[in-house]
Image 1: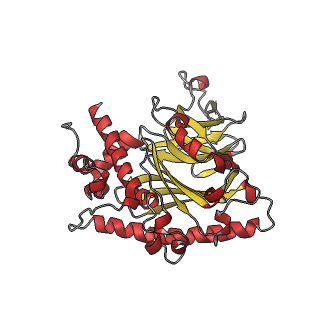
Image 2 (image 1 turned 60 degrees about the vertical axis):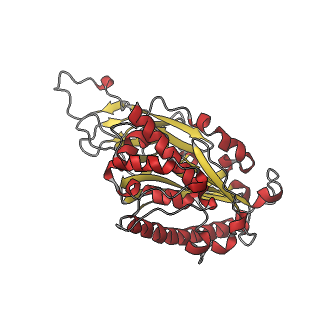
Image 3 (image 1 turned 30 degrees about the horizontal axis):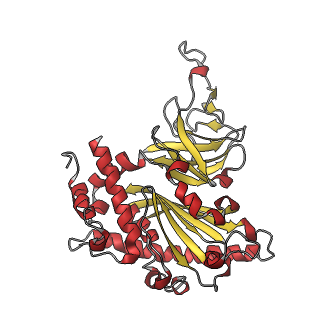
Length: 380
């Protein structure tokens, strides 16, 4: 075992050494420890792909979104040629951050001294710099960050050697081909911070075992435990499926959808693309969470979703969307309560991991992924 592996990582190593049939939840230290968070940022978020949202939300020249990935401020912007670019979101003068949130900009203007960059990151102008003999505008360009689009999702990575997104998750594309993920339009996007560890929220998404209890007031009655299928995960993702009750019509395939047949027409995929993109994909709508830690006890959440374009011409499309958003907001209130309670419990001296249900197979695979990444990083 590597000498520089932290005690929480050593605990996780012992935890993941067991086969699934004997598996327990991850030890509390991997959620509450600053040491383990440091390893996650160094070996996971600095190395893998991180999703910043949907490409259709960045449709026009100058549309941008920003994020902080493993401590690095990044901006993703649609340039004048229609290409998506990711770049450092730090001015090359006195190093202020440049853009914030999401929006549209004709150019990138530093809020400190108004150094101004083109949408490709090149410096357009800098006030009052003519007396500095060493200054040459053409020598300044915001550093590039890797950016790739996959089935309408936009990913960035700080790792020049990370395999392409499409290569890592090609099996996902095959599994959900009939849903046509590019055929969904984002109609809402929000950012939140919850008082829980990012892995608690990720694991909450990865299992539907909690639905009948945590979501008793909303969707708990629409899914049955016996209808949940949790196959073994793959190196870059895990998933499970549930069958939605036809009471939720907008979760069903639209009558015009001839791509899905039989039970596929009411099957929901819950996809967990490592490290932190969680997609609920139904034949009628989708929603997602993209998670990044803000410390052991806080998670920053990019939350978005919308309807399948199959529904776009229906007379009641707005009514359907309004009902969907109301439902998702209510589900989020329930999830926030549950996941914040879990983190409070993890911080207790009495916290001890129990055995996993067969419906928590994705959680086991997630722990295996985390351990593999941290071992690879500490052995490098």
